[in-house]
Image (cartoon, rainbow, N blue to C red; front, side, top):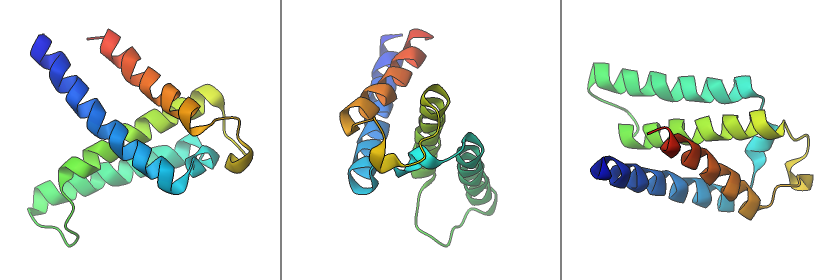
Length: 115
């Protein structure tokens, strides 16, 4: 079980790093997305993974790993949206980057508790 927890912490750290970098670049623009829009993004990533696995080739040099990380991050964004509601104007949102990151990490903590 310790190895599983270590692996979980490693993967969540990678996902958090990507999420943080994108939040620093784009802010919390995703806060305007409806849950159905986020699930569309998850579906697109899953279709891309399936396509790469079936064809064995890809036109853009992304690996499946980055697609899986994207799915994880979109899932947490969806959970935050469901919890906080959609923001009409993210620039006026009450969520600071720090608070957004706390919410993000709280969902990983909840998942860890289920292990």
